[in-house]
Image 1 (tube, rainbow, N blue to C red):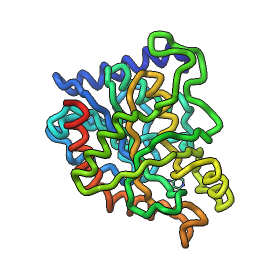
Image 2: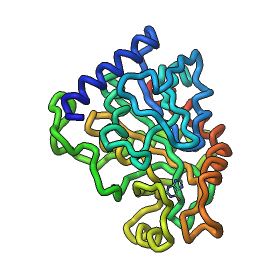
Image 3: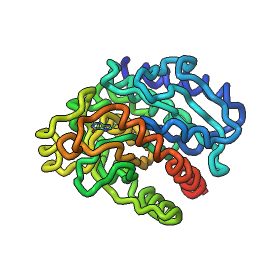
Image 4: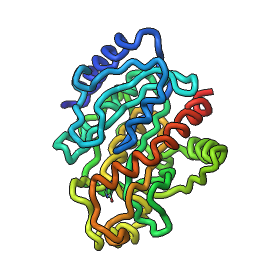
Length: 278
Ligand code: HPA
């Protein structure tokens, strides 16, 4: 996909979604990570659009990822929720993985909340804890903004000093506190997966400054920033990382933890939506 095609294709995808949702103008987008899909159930007056229907949209193949867009209102705010995402390890190109962020950009959405399940690299973390992403380390070996730059969208070289909005993190802290939740902040490091890490890799990542490790979010944040969107990242610590966990890692543990926290996550999203947009 050349960059100019991405613009036309994301415009076509956004127009298709627009046609399905009538007068609703989403003000906030939320991407739901592994095991967190049921957060979409909190959306009222929901219109559901499977990714398979949306032109050029990549289809989710990862277990625990719904693969549909749910629009409606959350906390009284018009939202666009992505129930499931695609990952590089599924065989998609970096441009395909981040195509949904391009579509959000065409929608004129200014704020996106990216959620994920992540391994806890920081030994102080516990399973089920929600952590705000303060910053990231791109250990993927690629950058999804590589390719011809489309000046209609963003700059060739752009700042990543505040990849994860400080202001949005402050709002999340306040909102969490209202619910009795202490939200600590951490650095998320992305690997391609699909294998989990070795204990030696986790020790190395800790030395690099990582608190969390996962296989998503970073490409989306890079493109969301290119599109001029503000990003709030929230990780659910689904497991302790390799070598910290007393047992081998499994995808089941990741989904089970997601299921455990999705009620809390839904409540947080609802309250956040009302605060972020109003
Ligand atoms: N490593 C990488 N990705 C993950 C993990 C992990 O331990 N847990 C959930 N996603």
